[in-house]
Image (tube, rainbow, N blue to C red; front, side):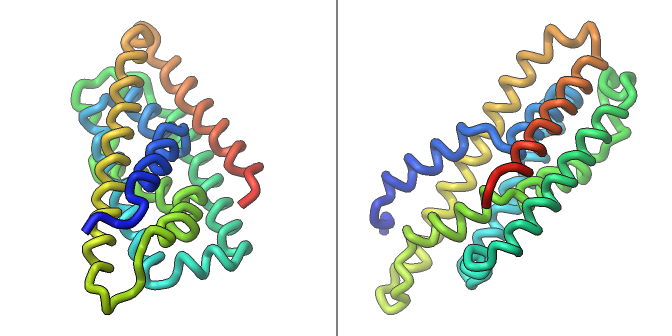
Amino acid sequence: MIPENYWIYLQIIFFLFITPGSPRILMCSYTMSYGLKKTVWTALGDITANTMQLFFVVVGLGLLVKNNPVLLIVIKWIGVVYLLYLAYDLYNTRVKEINAIDAKEKKILSFFKDGFIVAGLSPKAWVFFGVIFIQFLDYDLSSGYFFGQLIILWLTYIILDFFTLIIYGVTADKISVWLKSNPKTINIVSSFALIIIAFITAFIKV
């Protein structure tokens, strides 16, 4: 059964996904530095974290986060610190690692982990699941529609999230072509972008 107000839900998540946030900035930064093929694992880490966030929301933790501003603030600042760490790590990546075809210095699991942590610590994601997502669920278990609606809303979210992340990655990959003559520039630009997102996140009231 299609959830009630499903088309409104689609519009909301569409605008959510086209708005640059820390996961998408990370996707662009890693694509320019390591290539789209490896960065796909960052996107997979992102949707895995979102799936777990959704699960916690459904069992009640999302409501706890929504009603506990201190917990949300703690999550926000952990995310800010981790973004700054990623910016520092990316800035110090050796140029030859970027030019290397296999780029063995950074493992696939590391791409997945970074995508997972950045998405998992995103206050915007917690607010969405804890405040907006649950409003589209019918918690009347006797109706038999709850789990069907949950699966539809979840699949819609992760498919569109993954698709838009890849679009960001492809765009960044095209832009990076003219930067290949100076690989260090890619590191500087990417690190600077992550720092900007970290500071924006830091000053956003949650």
